Image (cartoon, rainbow, N blue to C red):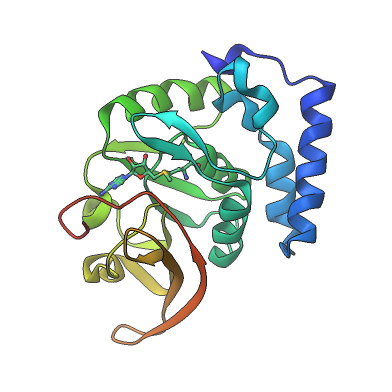
Length: 218
Ligand code: SAM
């Protein structure tokens, strides 16, 4: 598996350049930039494609899915305002790259992936790299009630609406970050639970994600 590969000077240098590129694109959270600078993204690629690993692009990981673009990972991570020890639910584990960034930020991560092939690969790769989230396989559009409440929830696939059930699993003061839109484009949305009954919604920039598929999704 990829995690046996070495993190050599070429990849380390490319990672530094990626951090500077993200800084220039507007990512200002130093903790997020430090995490991007630490996680070896090429470990998620077949060696043939290592030259693609530190470009600011999404890349196919098989089964019709992609490893997210570094800018998107940094953007969503920044919106979460992770504090050490936060319990974070990630919906759409995919390659696990975003999971590693959240762990580097000091979060306790619960992550769920609906596609069994991807899930089976990622549960091997991440522990091999020393990253240990709590993994689940299934439909994350309903959240994971038995692990709730969460300080933060991040959805890494495009949803048609904000699932109410996810809002119920947030702590007061908690933040949900979710791309919402149609199949072509989604707006990044953050929802802050300001009290037991009140939520504040902020609509941000446009992105393009693979669809969130499930009971409270497409
Ligand atoms: N952030 C990930 C990374 O860094 O590699 C990429 C995530 S990929 C863009 C979105 C993932 O969400 C896919 O692996 C897809 O199978 C998964 N997904 C879609 N709908 C889901 C659902 N209802 N529950 C859990 N995972 C889902």
